Image 1: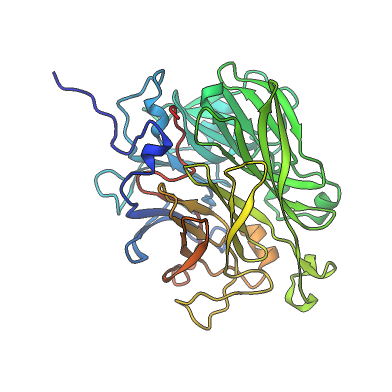
Image 2: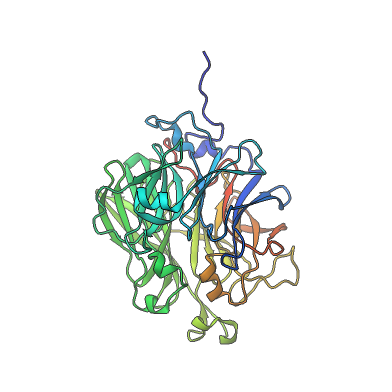
Length: 461
């Protein structure tokens, strides 16, 4: 009798995943900077030399590809998971503006994905009541996708699921959402049947670009929400403080016995700093504590875009974070100042900075050794860490309408690699520079072939 063997890229624990073969390819979302003139794309990057192996255009313009993810991952090895037969072969690629979802198959020719299914926005609207699909995570029972708003682009946003086999939308995930209205990211602690969600703003508030009025009014998201993952009910709200605007990326501990994680807030309206909070479970109550503060940097007014000139400083704008699979190092991208920071978070309540590299930045425009003399715009934005924790990749575009405010000269896009030392030090790989300038589209989310540090959840310590 033939045995059903799981996909070889599935690992029951993060420790085993760290021993996996080195990644060979990266899939990178490219968005049209002209806003609808040509389709967005997924680029395949050969990580051996930084060359662009292939570029797959989406069928029509206007998607605004943003975050995307795998159809299934190591959580499929949980003892209660009903899908041991599935393979990590499909990328689920949402269009953030179009609410269209593309399914890409990478199995037959990993360098050249092909579109095998497209879910129309009308189908998504009718079956879920949501629009603007954002983050994709593979769960044990379905593919989970966050949505920033309802079909009109207002609140509430939330989570819906796709069938593992057909990719058809199954419906809205929440049974009782409690006070939750705004939505952004989501992740979970599988061993504790707990989901955490974060907040940005509604699509109608985000799509025109950043609003000083909303910042001054402290109207962007600043809360975490705790859910019963099995009963799909809201349990608790954690307010990080309304001065901490835009609570974005969630990175829970990879060890399923632990109950802590990290979330970044983009800007403090009182001093322009950025922050990272550690959430944790204490006496059956979920709490959060600010553990990292990154200050703004003084800059001459002439080097700043209009919204920042009155402040005479560049905010870090911490827009993404990545946690290594051993739960030891946290990488923070500071898109405003052009800095990637590393912290040792072995003690999640006492992070210690271990490294820094700089590229781009609103005022600095720091260059890369592989592109001498070129003043880089954009800065470290989407950051992804390899499974062994020794390499970090990042791109430089945030979101089209927000790019254009903070980098009004336009974002000429690139992707780079940084090596991580055993002590958490960072060193730029001087020969690795993927230049998307000739393509003209802007690079955002990165997914590594076989999995990466923000793709998988695990069932065993």
